[in-house]
Image 1 (tube, rainbow, N blue to C red):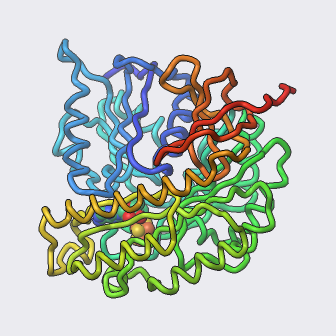
Image 2: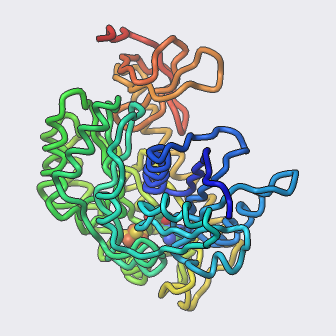
Length: 434
Ligand code: 5AD
Ligand code: SF4
């Protein structure tokens, strides 16, 4: 028997959906009367893990090990997130320090599982009845200026390299009314921007454009974004929404992964380089100047130099404003893990460098084009230098300013300089606080 924890800390790794889940777990524990601890001495630590790339599980176990304190004591440890989902009961066998294992669709049960730990048990729950979770969570109360809202979870696409269909389960959509209620609560709690989240957010089953339109009607909400989208689910109505809804920001994260049709086929991506480019053209016709962002994998099994050059070519053809790029990492249980034609580590490194150099040129060019223009940023954090504040542009660029501004304020700036990953700006006029 242990005492029930009084303080907790949630550490989230990986994607924005994990950040969202981490916030909800924190709110859930707070609703039980526990307080969030900032230091290393929390009674309960939740490790909200990511499983997308290699050695994720190893890393999670070594993170667990590091939670032992100098005096030999340790907090109650909950393993959550996608590693928890993938490892299940194995996790508590492999590490005696792990007191409970809870998957991404079961964390609404966290309080009762913590109580079970206090009663001497080591509970594991990796069930996947996703929707039950949301209904069991407390309502949202306080929010930062920019909030995440999960509207869809899971993935039915089965790209051959990806673990998500196994760790997050089948695609499911949250009900319209629940989402609108949560959006209103976030705005009431201080949010001015909401990013709708889902592994395949544009597969939300009521039509994402309709949902965006409904949320756009909320007074006090200024900006809407959504991520991550699959090209196959970019409907005409959603594309049109980009031209019609002012609050929908001019930014689209639309992963292509590769520019080679044979690699795309082996990845089971369901688009070709050409069909992707035509899609981008339609999006740009609906919303000129929209920032396109992407994800790339280099060194997928069988990738030749020619395939890789096709990827560089699509990067040039699109002119990405920003991008994430990764070396292929075999994930056990996925079809690609047993494919032939592994690319040598050295070749993979070299391709990643070349790709990232090319992507940096494009983001710098995109950022340069804003120098001298006036735009509005949403202040969301302090910079590292004294007096410096950072706000996001409509195109999701981080803009640094050296003026007093309050987090949550919308501020008009003139852009004065551009770097590959940020902009510098000067204040034009500060909005009068209401
Ligand atoms: N290896 C490398 N990158 C991967 N991603 C997903 N699975 C893998 C893998 N096995 C990348 C994809 C995806 C992003 C979230 O992570 O680019 O879009
Ligand atoms: Fe993974 Fe592909 Fe689904 Fe994205 S669309 S989560 S890459 S399987």
